[in-house]
Image (cartoon, rainbow, N blue to C red; front, side):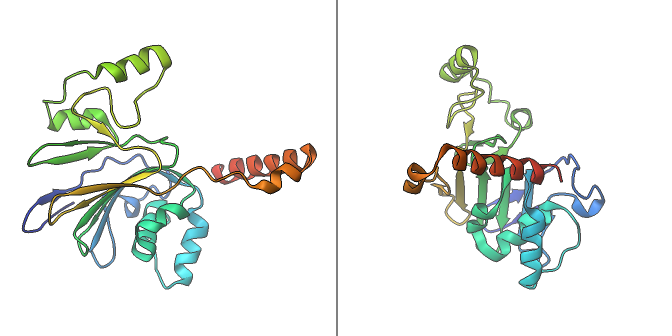
Length: 225
């Protein structure tokens, strides 16, 4: 899917691994009904059914049964705040042609990778390094620190750097917003570990064990959809 403005030529390319709604209705890049928002999304939103029902009650209609369309309409409804409503893992790229911005987001714990390359005149992003190397052959210089973390500590990447010097990694729990008018970008953390509730210190081991068990049971159940 492609678009343009006065300053940039824009394009999104997606190769789909179909899980939810394997029909063509779930294909990407996916456009909103008003064609002002374009989405490419790698991952899975486990609570998409609840979010879908909430969006329907707010007046949205759906063409598919995919979680991708839920992400798209959630952004239309709540903007970047929609990230805090998602239970899942993801690498998301959004072109908002109405606000003239590009939003890149990675899930809370960085289960899905999201890389980008930027120089004076171009900006590329992808959840796969190989695809970026195909369009940017200059991405070939090994980053020694990342190589050390991988070889000695089994870390696939550092917080901000991939295995290549010219290729950056978006941090977990973070989104990057690119202003397509100026070309400037800003990074913001949308989630952090919650503070420890003081009431936990008054609970018994039995109460805490039950609460943990309930959380694990729910996490497994919602993933079995």
